[in-house]
Image (cartoon, rainbow, N blue to C red; front, side):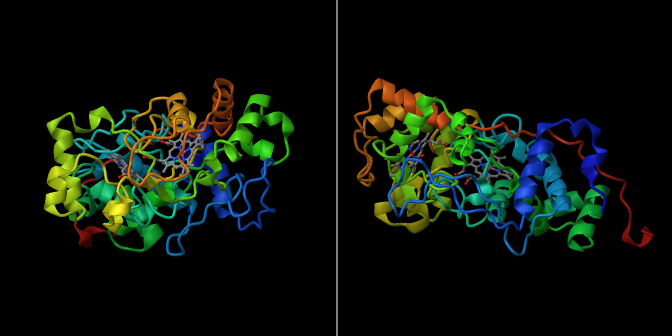
Length: 394
Ligand code: HEC
Ligand code: HEC
């Protein structure tokens, strides 16, 4: 199959294609990647140090191919993949601006609100579970909920398959890729997940520094890195190449005042509790997001959320599961004060005693994790075709 990117001249200049090239090369490389660089300020022995991201790996039943990325990209931008045809993944994860809604709490599908901050899709390939509470086991599974879920795409599976079947270019692409006569929902999920596996952070100055380029960081950022690894203790949870340990903690992040301020948000909030199998006496009275509790139903997990990556934060605000902090200064102030209130708060979240200067250094370090902006724009979407009875096909 030809490489359709080469036939899309508008895209030829796009940084995304470059990024995709790099991302794909990373994904496809069977490379033995060289020994993990060691962070200059040594972290404790059992904590993986910060390091550049390794190549992405994909599940064995859904390997990454360029053709699948191209199909997934079309589907990602296609609003016909929502119940009323008005919304695509890109509506809530805009490829042009950080891959996440920039309001604190995301809007929902028409007539609904969401109840959490929409995370960036950058580096989702590296998490073992998806969503702030780890409620989804794979990108494919997460995306099924995104297309089908009542407060997102609200798309019925059979309706989706029939829509795709009426778009000749999709029929052809699905046939070439998956061998089915007509497009299938699960294959659409395989394709759109594959596209996301190419969305990988690029060229953070900190990576260059960790690979030996001493000039890549300012003195401020170097001091910030030491604080991150030591006095401020960030490395305890934000570690390894992803700058996340992929685990769940309560920090006592304050509830966003927006959270419960409208009937629409109240509806989604109670509905999500009910849909996640929480007993009625809990969900009628709850006033905060329970996070990991939804997955485990253990009281000690109330208020725990997944440690997010700290890569490319300059593009992905606002911050935290409820988007309560607009700026990184607010986040650092929050940690310096010892976090917020929660009975399950992690014991390492304590007042840090960082001076103004140290806080500025820490911010400079966080900024050094910000690389080239990975963006994309909607490709031209294939139109519906004229209906053809199967026996008229040649
Ligand atoms: C109506 C807005 C909306 C739409 C449409 C939507 N999303 Fe999301 N998405 C969100 C929100 C909000 C979250 C956070 C949910 C949570 O953590 O519980 C999220 C979470 C995710 C995550 C998890 C990221 C992580 O770091 O764990 C992925 C992946 C994702 N969305 C991909 C998609 C894809 C692909 C589509 C289209 C198939 C899509 N989303 C459509 C709002 C939306
Ligand atoms: C005990 C583990 C832990 C430690 C230590 C920790 N974090 Fe976090 N961090 C988290 C978790 C969990 C979240 C998400 C919390 C939420 O949404 O409720 C988070 C969220 C963040 C965010 C928001 C990212 C986003 O995309 O929304 C930033 C920025 C951040 N941390 C920076 C830091 C810094 C800087 C330090 C050191 C001062 C630090 N963290 C220490 C676990 C930790």
